[in-house]
Length: 297
Image (tube, rainbow, N blue to C red):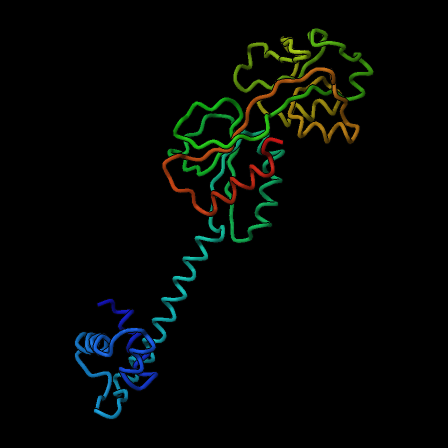
């Protein structure tokens, strides 16, 4: 027999004063109530109840055992309630990986809002632009920019990662404003050069269905777009960066959008997690919140 169940039956019999009353309350036969009590007594090697034809009472051992059984069952119920809460409420540590620029400028502020919403959650956020194997690197959820070919990942689409070109008013006053993509070749372009720092990086703009590719060149390259943003606001050249970040700089007057009649590059973006696992509550809550915040409009 299950010991916890037998403890519960014993407590009920002691509280109600008879096997018959306990049986009625527990929807079982008096014989089954007796079996549970006898199971405990045999296990303990002593009597728990003094039983006569007219009444029953706890023995000294039974009284002490009764008190402990109530504590044990109370703790068992608390443990089950805690497990249920952990299944229903996001809590614990979630390991997240994202590209550097998107992660630092856009995802990090979102994470703080998410943590405010779920105070029992912790997020370990790592940022890099290299390929991350979630199993080898211990990552539970990732945000990735670009096409997704890994079928071992569950991918939820987000709004495309759009880039726009901007420059400081002081730079445009000194060097002029480009009228078309081809004019950029005569300007100082601030180039993000993570993959190929020695090769000119193409910037692609589209208008009316036609693509215009420009070999962006300049005296300042960096694998950290934050450095390029600082250079742009200082008036050192034209930068190509995420619209979500540059829109704030434009609104503040620190930068001006260049070639506003053209669409800059746009790449697909997804939030992903490994397939083949049942998503935990904390994982689902984070993915759902990311899709709600950054999903397609």
